[in-house]
Image 1 (cartoon, rainbow, N blue to C red):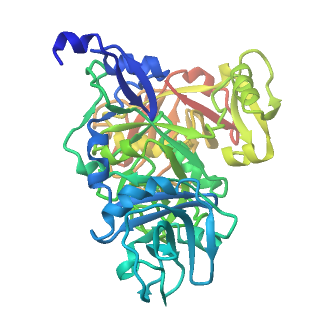
Image 2: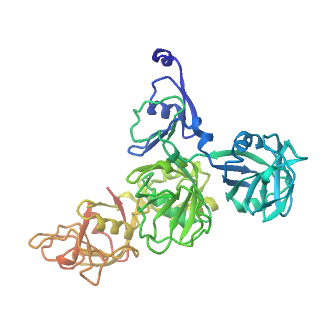
Image 3: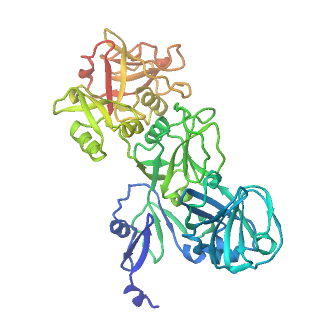
Length: 516
């Protein structure tokens, strides 16, 4: 077909698993618009081409969706591969024909296998073809539950593979169950024609698949772990710090405490948080099935977009959509919070300051999963004029700025809070929550002969036994830092923008911060 002929033909592409038809010469931006998606700036877009042509040739794993859940099988030899590839599509809709303590069979369907008499040995988790009456027109898909021997009517036993995940599902299957569908698992590593880009002007070809986001369903039994993940993707993306063949991970919440809540297999597409040991707080997304681990609490599962996870590389940002969306209302006014909560069917109670300039600084319950479970939340607000604005020096003091965010809660939320520990003369001191990170090594120290300006935020570093103390001065000082320490024991993390507001705060009051 000539270029002119192709120009008159529409193309069909997939956008996040949704088919759209477009004019020839369309770009990613056109496809996203047609499918109803917005691209988050600087997040990665994955493109796969030519999948259908090679799907059956490279697939060795298949997902079997039953009425009780998903089972994954892996083909273990070539002798039955052709018969399987020719036949598995006909198993959709087939009910369990019989079940015993040794095996369960679905069918019958017609196949090209060779029927034969004779017993064969089967191991637990084997999947095989068998026949009824030694007739290939009555072929059954059989899954072994135990080691046993039997005559299933197929030459050489008919074994084609093994169950590699979902074994707990197999134990629950009975005579009333059905195979809903079977899909091949395509490893993107098998394709040379995959593209990663952040540009939406790339032109598309017929049959291309475009992935722009990963949709993750959070697990109710991991209420704190889910909140940990919400904080890790607070800006709307998962920053890939490391990519291996079996997972990607982010260090965004590295060092933060997270309780162990959910012991389960780290199957393909699961989200887990390391809760103790080296790497505590790190978040992982599994690209392959892995065994459960007592240090990894399972907090969520991918619903759509696993292909983008498989393609992502270190340094890239992957756009994330969570289900349910995070129910943190901190930093919002009551009008905006009300729209969100009403849309989610959540009842809410207003508390504290109720004026038009109110800004929410606290909520109960704290976690999204508790709010969704109870269907209600209490929101507490203060006047926006009481909110203290700060600017942190990420360039000059990256470690100290991060320490301040973690100590104040700004790491997890849009509003941070610190109780006033002590106030005297021209100094106010705060003590934040415990921060499970490395020592506050000296960083961005005031130099001798210089002046610490009023409003600068200082943290005591490892040179003093009061490490971690946070302070602010209300006037300039050329001898001591904001916490009253000498310059060598002081790290300058940032500054208070509206210092006059802070002067009104009393000892033991809670100060609420927001970054500007």
